[in-house]
Image (tube, rainbow, N blue to C red; front, side, top):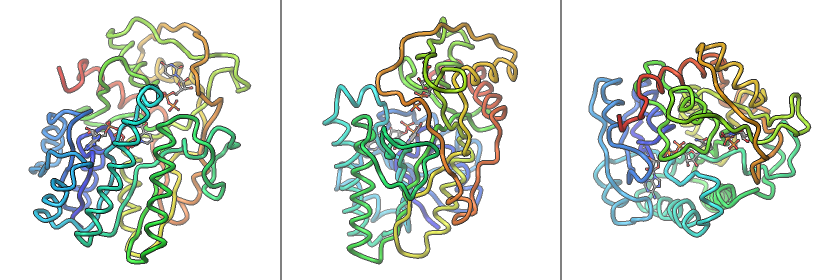
Length: 337
Ligand code: NAD
Ligand code: UDP
């Protein structure tokens, strides 16, 4: 199948390109590189041993999207492109709605006009909202998102559901990711956040490599096993493989949401301890105040993806730590090094 991959130069996109090509699919990347580097595509090309076509463009640019569909005759879209920093989304909500919601609307319009009606969308566990009990299960429906970023994901899910219900030629998978970490086992591609990382794993590896002095653990007084927050961390290669399963299952019309997680919560302190034991690196840390908007615990009920897509996360927390560290230690400055 020929797949247009929006945001294909980003963290999850690059890992998905590798798995798509390995499975025999053809790809074309559509990315404006606002949060990624063309070097990442070069690394993917090196890993797969072939050229990866790229359209440099914005998903809000209809003319550019139309040209991409006309020139590349894609049969399906995997849609990663979007802004994802929760903290920034509080400060710039309109920019988040413009990129993520208006951008997706433009993309869906261009797909409709090009007759491409299969989409796999990067959603998030945040759509369950701040009051949902763990584990999150798809039958719960969406809750009240705890931040504007989550709000954009909920609106896009609703937009796609409305579109599919109006026209049964469409088929859509809404993939609700939990916490992707890790990197390709080669150490050639991985997560390369701009500036000081917001997320735990890149922060932790940047402390280990000496780019940052210490980790601040946001709160140790939650009602959890050890007082620190629990999350469902999954390996980015497992996550990438989930997209293949969703794409291959989507020959039938309709819309369905799937949790992509391991089904297991791990606390921040357990993350630090596992990283230290796997890599032998010590992580200096301090306990800091809670971070606004953090939920005590979030993990998936991952049985729907297992039963309906034949997907489950295979890699262990130790694999995630080893691969994150291989990437960070071999590329201390990310793609900029
Ligand atoms: P990323 O920032 O590494 O990748 C996103 C890519 O989209 C980047 O290459 C960026 O340049 C591109 N992009 C952004 N806005 C664009 C636009 N308007 N037009 C064209 N390209 C644009 O992020 P990621 O971690 O790979 O995440 C991919 C998707 O998965 C995002 O939609 C994100 O919200 C979602 N998601 C990520 C996580 C996570 O923890 N990483 C969790 C849940 C959901
Ligand atoms: N976290 C932390 N220090 C950091 C970054 C994150 O203690 O520098 C904690 C955060 O409070 C949360 C967990 O690590 O409990 C995962 O945070 P991340 O931002 O990676 O993911 P999300 O909040 O989206 O689940």
